Length: 457
Image (cartoon, rainbow, N blue to C red; front, side, top):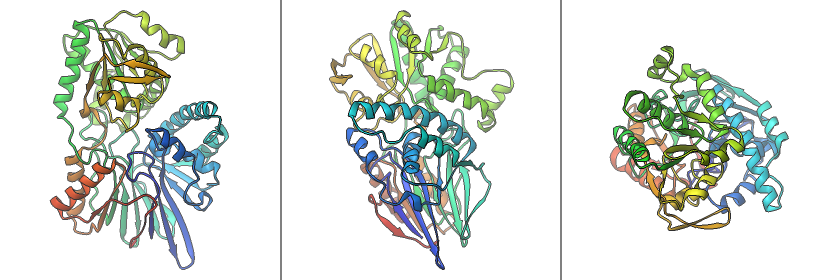
């Protein structure tokens, strides 16, 4: 089998891998993920160039989860000729439907402003969804030529999965993104115990998160400071997973501590819709959450929480006096309503901007997080006078030690031949490669873009 790396190499985003199987004159081509490259102006150019393979030659596209850096170019793949089948878990398809529809608006807006053709249109998106089938966890599916696909829970976001392909008694696993287990909402990442090859993420390959008790304490302290000093707290939060986790934490704070109830705005129509999907698939949340919900506790809602759907509701948030909290997308401040709030308050010393997730290189969020004294928002140069805070412990990715422990478990059976380290900034991926070699004596390797590797499967 030939394994091709067409995205997610030297970069966190843009995951796109292709397996070419050929046997006795028969061929099957299987792509894993087809994500958008994010984070810079250069990313837009990369997203627009032709795929380095013929989309019409791909028989199956296997999706690990619904983040845009794993699904964002699927409609483009269809536009360029893909007519095969797309597979994901049911929850991933539901969330992907919402995210792709939201992304369509962004794609069309960027095309208008740039005077170019959009990456794809509504017809392409609808065609992609018509090709999309669902596969529950632990349900083997024969793809042909003796190749079987099975999904295992990666514990990253709702519906996220590791894609396990087996053939002739050998296995290759694509991890997608691996969850920061134990999670407040989700089940733990399942162990991989019999894979011969692993293609794994490395977002936090070179660093560890702060302890979960520490992140909770820090969030509570920031909220207490917001209340005591009548401040504005802006939290750029990914609509998927991060918003739901922060809402759960706030629900606990307001229910179980002496924190005063203050207005909390979820200023994201997309986050509102995705939260409803979490409620729909509550049976896939962990046992603790299911128990709370069975007792009638709506874990994502509390007094003085308001979901703002219409633009005028978003604009009216400024009419509410401090103290108050705004959660808005996007999580990297590279679009969405949070950018308007940052434009209005990044120069306000009575505002706090709290980052609770990874900020990709080149994004506005990364600039602010890295301590820029001045930023440009909507063409306006603004001094950064707001208080800037970061809590990395809320990441939904495993940290360096978590990734090491995952591979250590996978190596115990003795048949692990090679680990391909991808989906991380270059320094993070290379650090993890060396860590796996030094600590586990595992054959770890970081492939380059468009590299092709022959493996036995």
